[in-house]
Every structure is written in structure tokens, then in C-alpha cells.
Image (cartoon, rainbow over all chains, first blue to last red; front, side):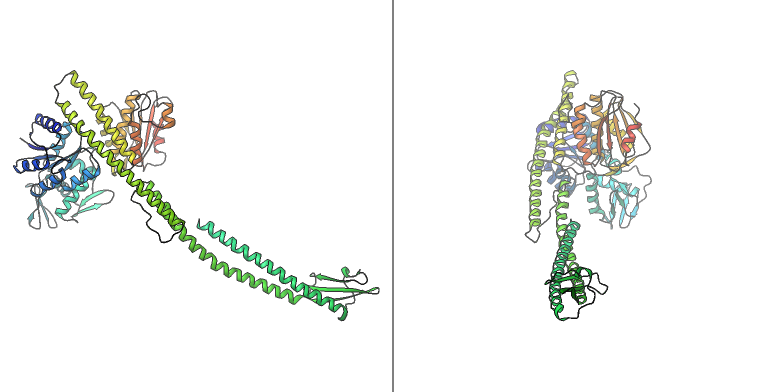
Length: 219
Length: 390
């Protein structure tokens, strides 16, 4: 059973969202502040983290940063503000996606499913080599210069998307659709910030920005 | 401005040169004339007279001396003097050719000096004016950038304490004040958003958990309405703050609009002409379309048609059309019979993505909203309107 960790300070939201997600068949643990959330996370076994941005003790952005130090578990931010500061800081800290409150449970579930979807309807399992980067689509592993990279599932999906189309410019809409399962309602900053994080790991010049269009993987 | 000031300076310099030239010319001539006259009057007693004095001198009265300046002569101007001696007129002339040549040489050097002065003054003026105009243009450009939403734009300190430096400082402090006000307004909006959305989210998910039934349907419906209203209000205040930035990408309009319309869940007749694409912000375009289609259903009558052409989208219904005051004054918030915020938001979002949204009524009834995207070919939307069947 998929195990979710929900960190939310508003009691009603915490309880109702927890109950609603349980109806969808998820196992849900909840915490009311950032530190309690971190404590609970350390006990292990969570498949997706749902974090409110504004939390007492340790806010969602700080919590994301702490989690990312040790884990690449998918993180979904829930912002009540939806302004750029919240969203950008959350994504920079390492969140994979965000939703703006209020959000229907159906939408929340769709987002969780997208984060859990294994990126790889790829044909073939041969290793892909781009310079010092070695991608193993079958084993879902990426090595750079011999050492294994710690990529979050979203970063891995994004990299596989690029690797499937080396040298081809992929625009933000395509990436939002293929990696995040957004139709037209995705926020292109999600792509930009995930590309930034991916670059920091695979080498800044591996993924080129094509101004006004999107990104491409350098062969 | 540089040309106007330049022309003015040239005109002023020329006027001064010509006026001075004329005055000097006249006084020099007057002096030469006076000297020549005295010499001629002296010579009339001592000099060798001519045999046949010219006509104007022939009837000199006795005891009278006259002089006459004649510049019609073949050998240059001369000064005549004459007096009557009995029945015969004694007349002499003094050559003034030398004086005239002097005067001409003098005129030439005056003209030369004038030209030299112009050659110095005009470029110097142009330089100064160009500097002034560059500084003014910087002020204007910065003001324009601020108006376009770049609130960080500043002219910066200028070395000088003239009026332009003053206006620069004024514009800069105005921009800073504006920015601060916007920031506090945005902070307020963000705070309100947080304060409203948190309980609303509790309400939304609680309503989802209620057991099915008629009462639950009522509650869910009202929660949905309340939620849309709050989202609309927050969107309006963000648009009002004027700090919204589009996130542009290349979008195939056909599938995008189809998906947008599908999600409204409302029946719409969709027609796509060709395979149009546009560089736009798909999320904002989605908001505009959703609002237009919802509005058409709420206030118009079916069938609602959406037509997509090259860089332009038209939404029309077959109801009574937009009310006259809406067409005249534009959509007003919450005014009229439940007009709501949909059209105001659509207009605001259109502005953010650089599109033009025009509202009109079809000749045979029904409201038409034409959205012309930024890179639409000229008249794209007009052509679309013509294509809509009546």
C-alpha cells in the first residue's frame, strides 16, 4: 500500500485530507508541524510527502531541504498563496510539484499518481551514454564519472525524457505533459526549476537552454 | 527636440549676423557718402567742371549748391556737386568706386565671419542639445518601462543640478513609492489568500467526505460557487496589482482550446481552421477561454461556438447578446444581472498575455468575444468573425 506523509498545521485540512486520501486506498500518516513531520519521516517508509508551505516550527521549504539531504522521495507542496515566492522557493528546495489550496482530493490524487508513475515507457534497456553521464533506463540508475547520482523520481523522469530525444529541443509544455502529466494547466516554472536542479547534478552544460523554446540534452 | 533647438539656434545666429551686417553696412556707407559729399562740395569751387552736367543738376537755383549721388554710371557710383554761375551750371564729380569696393570687401568678410561663427555655434549647440535630449529620453524611457510593469527601472543619479536632474529624481522617487505600494498591496493579497484559502480547503475536503444525498449536493454546490468566487477575487486583485508575468510557450491552439473547453464540461461546437499555433501563456489562455465559454452559457443561449483561426479565437453564443452598457463601458465588476467577474478577468488576463479581447454583438444576435493573440496576422480576428455562421 502506498504510504503518504501529510504535514499540515490546519487540523481540519489534516484530518479531512487524510480521510479522503484513505478512501482512495492510501495509507496516510499525519503531522501538525515541520519538526514533527521530520521526526515522522525519519521513521521511514513513506512513498510521497505532502507538505504545507507555512508550517510552525519548521516550514515546508526548510523541511523539504532537510528531507532532500537524505532522501529523494517525491515531495508535493501545498501552498495557500500560490505566489511566486512560495512556489519558487519550494521547488528550489527540491519539491517535485505544487498545488494551490483549496484543492480537490481528485486533483491531489492525480498529482500523487503522477509523482509515483515510474518514468519509462522507453523502448530497449541499453545503457545510454552522454559524455561522462551513463543512464541505465532499466535499473533506473544514473552514473556520472563513475559515481551514482541521487536523482529524485521526477528528475530521473525528466532526464529519461531528454535521453529519449537527445539533441532535440523539448518545450516546456511537452515536458509538463510527459513528465508531470499536465495537460495545459501546468506551471512552466516547475519545469525550469527541476531542470535547474537536474543541471546541478548532471553538469550545467549537459542540458542547454534554447531561449524562447525550451531545453535540449547535449549529445 | 534636437532639431527644433538646432534650427532655432541657427535661425537666431543668422538673424544676428544679418542684422549686424546690415547695420554696419549702412553706417559705413553713410560715412563714405558724407565724406564724398563734402569733397564734392569742395571740388565744385576748385575742381575741373564737366561740360555737360546731367539732367538732375541743370536747374540749380542761384546761390544754391546741390549734391547728387549717382549709382547708375557705367564706371561705378559717383558723387556729383553743382552750383549755378550766371546762366550756366558748374558741376563736378567725385569717384566713389573705391568706397564701393571697400564696402563690398567689408560685406564679404562680414559674411565669412558669420559663417565661421555658425560653423562653431551649430555643432556646439547640437552637442549640448543632444546631451539634453539623451537625458530626457532616458527619463521618458524609464517612465515607459515603469508603466510597462518593470518597477525596478530607475534613471539613477545624474551629475548636474539642472531641471532634468530634478525630473529624474522625481521619477525615481515616484517609481520607488509605486513599487512600495504595490508590494504592500501584494503582500495583503497574499495574506488574504492564505487566510481565505486555508479554511476553504477544509470546507472543500469536508464537503467531499459527506455522505451522498440531496443536502450534500447543495453544500457541495455552494462550496464550489464560493470557491470560484474567492479564486476570482484573488485573481482580480493580482491582475490589479499589475505584477503578473506571462510564461510564454509555443502552443498548438486547436488541441489546447479543445482541452480547455472539454474541462468546462459545457456543450460547445468547436471548429479549427488549419493548424494554428501561437506563442502564449497556456494557463492564462485557458483561464480566458473558460471564462468566455462559461459566460456564454450563463448569459447567452446555446449553441455556443468556439472558432479557432490563425492567432485568433472567437467565442459566440446565440442569446440576446451583450447588454449595451457593457459594450459601451466595458465589463463592470458584479454589476448588472450577475455579471460577475468572468469578463473582467478575461480582459485582464488578455492584457497580461498581450492579446486583445473585443466584445461585440453579431448582426443577427448573440454575443461574440474575439480574442486576438499577440502575434496574430492583421485582421485575423475580424476574418474569424466573418466566418462565424449567423
